Image (cartoon, rainbow, N blue to C red; front, side, top):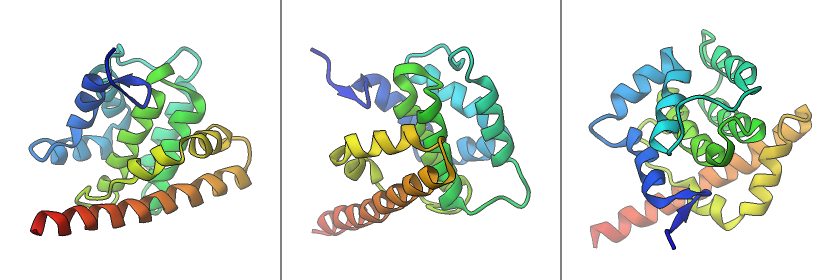
Length: 174
């Protein structure tokens, strides 16, 4: 049985995250700033999809893209959380939505300066709290309060992910 990551085959998961590899992250984030839907399509293809959102979710993704392209942009932390919640809550990419939400959120965090080097690893904490995380993400578009709750959880995961990254760096120092 193939290993899975966020509901997707592990190979496809790794391919989706490849848009953040050191040799392409600058091009990815540059494109994300001007054409975020193009980056979402690329992530979807790498994750095994056809690059198109589920029928009926295009309008929500257009709204998300418009938010991302506002000038001046909103706070990078808030944008990264909204990207993740919006993709997951709308189930825009079916079974790949969680994975695409996670990768797109990382793109937003890097692009808008919240995590400019992409060093945080919030996925570890989110995986440990998967039920709570997914329930909050799915509810996030129901009300302003639900979105605020999700953003609190997202920021907690980000803080824990930064501590995790620091631990990894310390261990690498030896």
